[in-house]
Every structure is written in structure tokens, then in C-alpha cells.
Length: 420
Ligand code: HAM
Image 1 (tube, rainbow, N blue to C red):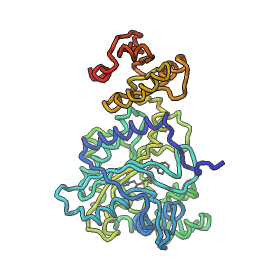
Image 2 (cartoon, helix red, strand yellow):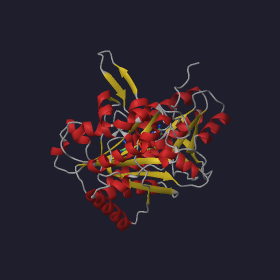
Image 3 (spheres, helix red, strand yellow):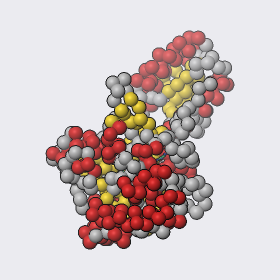
Image 4 (cartoon, protein in one colour):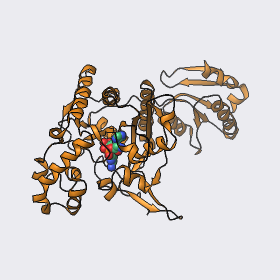
């Protein structure tokens, strides 16, 4: 038997209504903040991620689904959305659009070859936003407040917003030098990847999945001690806007994020439920990326964004015991008696549905009792029973399933009945 690939999942009808509810709500929230949807391809040139996300990140080194197409081009199933959105911004010259900054959101599958765990998949669905074209602490704070608004609007309460600044390129240069000095004497005890990262990208040692719990990682120099004056001032302003907005946060000077493009504001939203027993608690991650556009041969614009996975949002909802307010209503189930009635019901259903009535019938030649059970299972608001007599009189009893009451209605006036 062929089975589903490891780390992927089917979203079955009983769950897809939750997904649709979440996605609809996210679309509505985006209207409040004036973000417009962008859809980019599922696969991109491998170079985009190697350059954009960073050659020495775990994502690029270990987790990408990369393949050659029949034209010998190296393509990669997108592991994240930011690089692709920035690619599209540059390619479509969005810096010239009249409305600035450009505020975009996306929602779709991403692919990473990771170890399967609760809340971690190889195909997962990210909802994300990117605001490109404004370097202003107020937009950083707005993005952070928006993330929290999104989670709160689903009723989640046990959340923690963790923030940090990883400064500008100059601050990072000094910091990297300090990291090299710190790790050099002990680097032999680290994995091969970390050894090769020491001189190319020492910050990546801090979030290596193999070594990140080592003592030397825990007491490594902290980026916040290496921020230059302008980076510090930017960070202070972001925090003061957050205070104005009443957004609670905690600072974590060790939060460096796993992708190379970040500068200044970096953040994650974590589950903060003491009873949660899973290993994965990060629901969402994001930050500012001031050099990414230029790195991808674009204009010298800057951006900020975040992404969250719907899988982890569902996990958090489950943990907090939150039921989504999903209404799945169904109007009418038609019970038929005899061949004539069955034949007639096909035409009637066609007419009802074309007039906006959600309706169905039996297809399995069930007895009356079985058809009634089917009406119950569908949670139909109304049922009708059509037999020879009803056809002859052009009149049926329509039964309201909630009250048990019936009314007489002309068969050819059913649509008007529902419209009323
Ligand atoms: P990231 O931290 O790699 O950032 O991923 C963001 C979120 O995607 C995570 O917090 C988590 O909710 C979800 N996620 C990541 N990997 C998995 C997985 N294997 N299974 C389930 N969910 C997962 C980014 O991707 C950046 N592009 C975010 C960003 C946007 N930064 C700026 N703009």
C-alpha cells in the first residue's frame, strides 16, 4: 500500500473547515491593516534561497527539497516565503508603485526536510506578511502588535512575545569577531557544520540543532552587548512604541533566528502554557531585513515581516481547549419513496441548488428510516418526503428538524420558501 510521505498530512473534511475558518479570518484581519495578498510559485531557483536565506543556515544546508528539472535547472520547493516575496518585489519593480510601503501577505505550503515531531512537518502551511519600503520603528512595532492581535483574535491567551535586536551590519561584524574568539578554543567538540561555520558565519552556531544546548553556546557573547549607538536607538524606539500600544513582551538577548537576512528587530511568539508537554513552542517568527533586497540585486529598500504556520496555530488552539466558532449549516435533505419520486428529486435538487439552497438526497437506495438518519447526520435544517401522492398533489410537508414542526408547501414553491 502506498502511504503518505513522512512529515506530511492529509487535511480531511472534518478538519478542513477549521483551516478555511482560520484562513478567512486571516484574510479579514489583513484588510484592517491594509495588506494585500501575493501568490508566488511553489518552487524557485535554488540560488534564491542559497543567497537570500544564507548558504550556511540549516535550512539551506540540510532541509531543502532541491531537484533538477528536465532543462537541468536547479529548483527548490520553497522552504519559506520571504526570499520569494522579495524576489517578486524586485522583479515587478514594486518600489515604483504609488502606495508605499508595499504591504503584502501570503498563505501557502512550504517544504523543509526536518525531523518529524509534534508541530513540525516536512510540508507545512505558512501564513506570512512582508512590509517593504519603510525603515521606521513604528512599522516594526505595528507588525509585532499585529501578530499578537492575530493570535488574540482566535482567543489564545497563553502566549509570549519574545524580542531582541540583532543590530545593523556593523554591529554584527564586531559581534561575529567576538563569537569567533569565544568558540575557537572549543570548536573541536562541535559538529562538522559548526566547525565550518566558525569563520564563515559564527552566529549560526547559536541555533545549530545539534549543538545549541552546549554550555559554550549558553554562555556565548550576546549581540545586545555589541549594538552600536544607532542600532540601540532603533531598538529603544521599537520598545517604546510597544509600550504605547500596550503590547507585552520579554527580551531575550539570545534570540538570533535561524535565517541570515535579519537585522535589528527579531522576534518570536511562543506558547506559554505551563501544562504543554510538546518540545515545540514557537508559533511564529520574524524580523527586519535591511540588506536582503540589495543582496538579491534589488533597490536599497528595507523590509520587515513574519510567518506563522497554521499547523502550530491549530496546536495552540487545541492546547488551550479553544473551539472555533464554525457554522456548517445545511438546508434541506430530500427523502424519496419510489422511482417516480427519485427521478423527480434529481430535477428538484438541481433547481434548488441553482437558487442557492444547500440540499442533498439519498443515492444508496436506503429505506425511509435510513434516509432520515442520513438527514440527521448532515444536520439538515429541513427535510421533505416525496412520494407518488406528493407528486400528484404538488404539495409536501416540510419539516423543521429543530422544532419538529411541519408546514405544507407547494413543491414548485420550495425555492421561494427558502428565500423567505
Ligand atoms: P521561520 O522561523 O523559519 O521564519 O518560520 C516561521 C514559522 O513557520 C515558525 O515559527 C513556525 O510557525 C513555522 N514553521 C517553520 N518550520 C515549520 C515546520 N517544519 N513545521 C511546521 N511549522 C513550521 C521564516 O520562515 C521567515 N520567512 C519569517 C519571516 C517573514 N521573517 C521575515 N518575514
